[in-house]
Image (cartoon, rainbow, N blue to C red; front, side, top):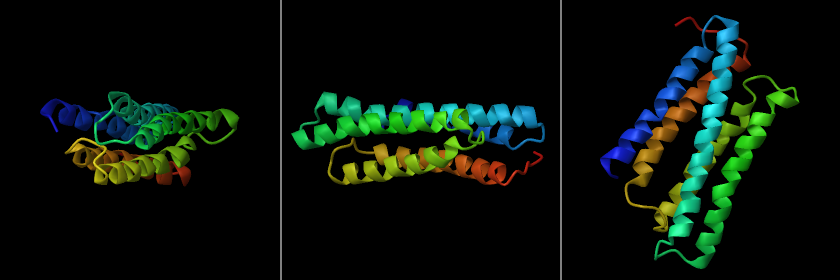
Length: 157
C-alpha cells in the first residue's frame, strides 16, 4: 500500500478513539453526544468501505469476472443500507448506542468479505493489512462503548 492511504487509514481511527473515550465519560449529556458522534462516524466509514467495491467494479480490474463486478456493486450498496438502518434505530425508540448493534457486525462482515475477495485476487495487494488494523481499532472502540453504555455504566478517564 502506498504511504498516503496507509497514513489516512490510520488517522481515520482518531475520531473513533476520541468519540469512544468521550462516550465513556461521566457527563451524561456529553457522553450521549459522543455516542451519537461515534454512531455517525462509524456509519459514514461503513459507507466508505462499500464505496471501495463500487469503485473497483467501475474500474474493472482485469482479473475480475462480470459476476464479480455485479457482486461488487451489491457490496457497494449493502453497507450504506445497513448504516442507514443503524442510524434510524434511536429515532425508532432504541437507546443511543443501538446503532452499534448493527455497525459492529457489519464492519466484521465487510472485513471477512474483503478477505475472501483478496484471496481471489480482486483487491489490491497490501489492502488487507491496512483493513485488519483499521477494522480492529474501530471494532474494539465500538465494542467497548456498546458494552459499557449498554450496561449503563460510565468510566472516568
